[in-house]
Image 1: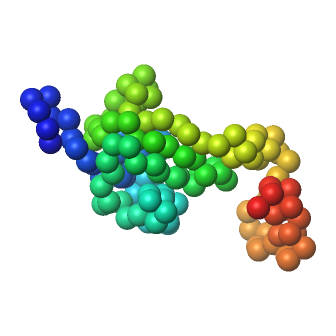
Image 2: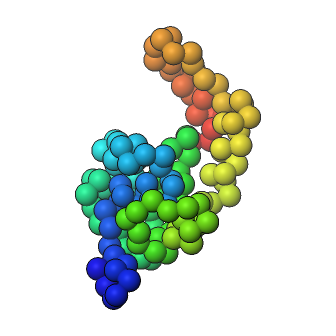
Length: 131
């Protein structure tokens, strides 16, 4: 902690993801880290890993990779307007285009309980998404 206003120098990554409203709950942030969906410095991180100002974080959710830059370390949940000042969304445009495709229904989805896709179905899905 620094100064009289007690702004933390670094904070746990799961707390930060929750604080800046990237994840709805801290449990969801922790699960993303445990499933290797959060990448810091090119490596998947554990929920207890500290994040510092200036670092870039990649969060894989909703079918795309969201890229964020840490502008301020906070460990308490804040309002949306303050949260925008603590992180910068630097997601590339091609990733946002993938999200539009997915939300638009152009990506083939399998109904729950249908099992794994066949090799042909998997290749068709990858061709549409552009993986």
